[in-house]
Image 1 (cartoon, rainbow, N blue to C red):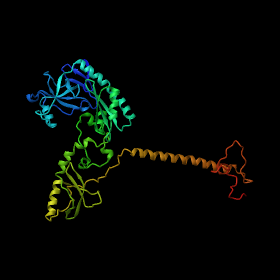
Image 2 (image 1 turned 60 degrees about the horizontal axis):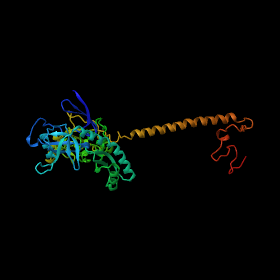
Image 3 (image 1 turned 90 degrees about the horizontal axis):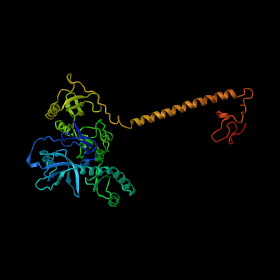
Image 4 (image 1 turned 45 degrees about the horizontal axis):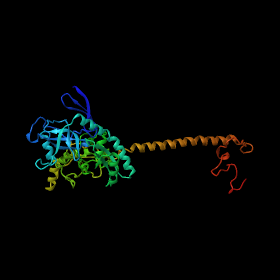
Length: 434
């Protein structure tokens, strides 16, 4: 595949080369080319939507535009589009009937909605001017963060996006509460000499811009393909019977993981076929209590001992429905114990066993052990030296210790200094001298 030497940026994050066939070969960067929509109607023509195209810009900002230029435009073309002030440059991502599907998803009525226009295809000088504006984005972001810190605003500027003509900049910021940035906009306008637009984003959008790897070992979903974030609650974890451990449920953004919603519908469908057991099941050999439920396999585990997980017997959900109906009629099955149905293994909860801080606690315990063992080892030679010093230095005839030179250090309790700084062989004030 032969590529042209001319390179440009598809949406301010990716290095792009146009192939001989006219397609774009993109070097992916986080937060840029997210494959949110797959054109499964590619090659299908429909006259109703032939003049409508989806155009994408930086940070998953996209919109549907009407081709008013009359030029032949296809997916992958860089086009000049209408903006609020001036013009912008974006890349065409969808065309044809799939654009009509996107209109229905966004609840856009083609008869009443005022579409912005596509003026023409981008020329070489448009791309060069666009790249000059892109080159200013990083420097502008660093300087804007410094200005916000000088003004004492509780906010973080995550990214800056310049318009295609270089006359406007969108500052994406993150803040916990409301921020009064009226003074900030004035300073930005004087500093950068452009029109300013402030747009607040959340922690999920910031993680999508930065990128990274998740606990699954794959690239973060928010930086790979997710651009429309849905609300995620702990009820999704409860439906899947997951432990409500913040260390497991939180992602790199500090919020609940987006992947919690992936299998929620499957678990809810399986739970619709599992009965809710509020009372123990009655058998001829006793009462059986529900101890655990395997949602995906639709298996329920019962035990005759309500306080133990040792002897559990698996029963399918459809069989539990029959047993409940029999109990309501006053009938009791024989027993859960059967040669064909072996007892389930004992379930052991692992909540907290794989906490992240377990390594820190183990390291602290090791340090304490090393310190205590080192103190004991250092204390024993000192005690031995003191004992040997007393036995060797004592005069067997007089029973007194010999005098030492001034340069020698006294060791032990006899010749050393006590806590008050007095010599150990001198009598204390509160005891009579011998």
